[in-house]
Every structure is written in structure tokens, then in C-alpha cells.
Length: 196
Image 1 (cartoon, rainbow, N blue to C red):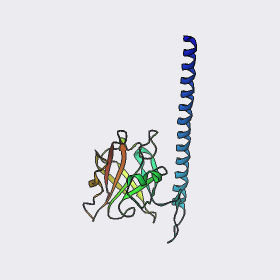
Image 2 (cartoon, rainbow, N blue to C red):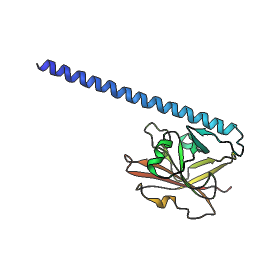
Image 3 (tube, helix red, strand yellow):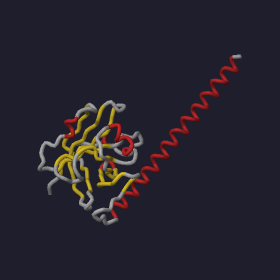
Image 4 (tube, rainbow, N blue to C red):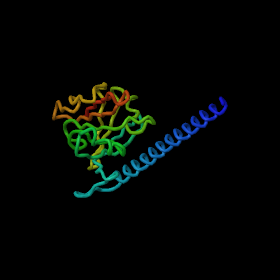
């Protein structure tokens, strides 16, 4: 009798392990497909001359720029969305980095962009490795790339809207936002344009 119970438990655990491995493999495959799509969009964005009414899109969202962070080897399209409601940003954030708040890429003021903190290091998953003084590059629709230097890094509550404020309209600033601590807090990295 005990042998039958042990066999049943073993079979249940084995099936559970197989299902878990399949789910992890599927998630990894989706992540790799998403990374491939992002690189194709970046290549298109970089190589195509965009006219007044033309746009480059990723899964139905307009690409308004590219964010590059050399230290952690990431480069993603920045997607335009019409809301800063966290519930409505979930879908576009599956595909790329989103403009959460602010004007256009490289405009004066504070542009806040948000991305997932993926366990495999994609999207903003490696931003926790950045330090004050590291460089963030933003490329806008005119293909102008500007460099920004990180000057502040902190963790805050998800409802802290102070991070979106523009304190000085005469400077260009970017705020990188990602979740941390099981989505209970936000890692914030603030950077100002480097004037050369």
C-alpha cells in the first residue's frame, strides 16, 4: 500500500516538474522572440528615413525613440502610449520600454520611461547594476542621439508621482522606472543630459 502511495506521489511530482519546465521553456522562448522583434524594430528605426506621417511600430505601438545603455548592453525601442495608468501599460511593456510620462524623446523637461525588470536580464532587468555617473543614450525620431548621465538612484513606493515632476524646464532629463522587490517598490534612475 505504501509503495502505491509513493509511486502516486512520485508520478504527481514528476508531472508537476515536467509542466514547470515546459512553462519556463515557453516563457524563455517568448522572451527570445520578443528580443528578436525589438532588434528588428531598432534596425528598421535606425535605417529608415522617417517622413512626416510615417511611423515605425512594434506590435501596434508607435516607436518614438531608442534607449541604449552601453554598460549593461541593452538597447530597446521606446513605445508611445496614451496613458500612465499602470494597468494600461502592462500590455505595451511586454514588447518594449514605454514612455510613461513626459514629452518626446530628447525634449526639454523630464521624460519618464518604464520597463519590466525581467529575471533573465532583458528590458530593465539589469538596471540594478548601474551606478551614478553611468551613461544612458536616447535617440529620437530625427536620429539625434543624446547622452545622459545618471545622477540619482533610489527605490520608492509605486504611487510616488514626485519622480515624474520636471524641476527645471531648461534641461533635458530622463527617469528610468522599473519594479523591484516583487513589484512592491520601484527602482528609479534619474539622468541629466551631458552638455558637451
